[in-house]
Image (cartoon, rainbow, N blue to C red; front, side, top):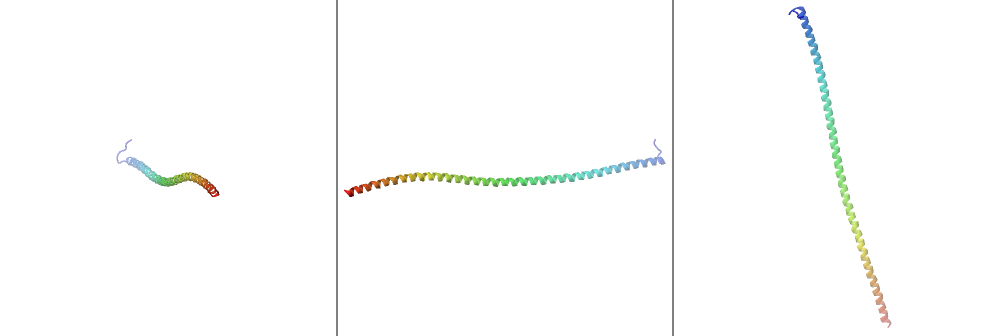
Length: 133
């Protein structure tokens, strides 16, 4: 029931309403403070997580670069070793061919020497025959 303005009951109602509004305002302020604290904590956590992700990503990129450089170095070494192996193989093949050529030349020289020995033996026989007559 409405009270007459200015009456003690109206003043008491107004004071009660004012206390309710103050209590509601205080509750809202507490909720707002709590929300701000939660927001700040979330922002700090988010920032920490973002910084951690950035740190992990930087470490990953560094490791990836290190591995790539090591692989490139290993590839260069392997390429150099393959070239040396190919060069060595070529020299060995040439050496094998050279040995075959030398064997052939030695065979030819041996045949010539045998032929020369035969000619020398024939000449000695002729000299003996001519000197014995």
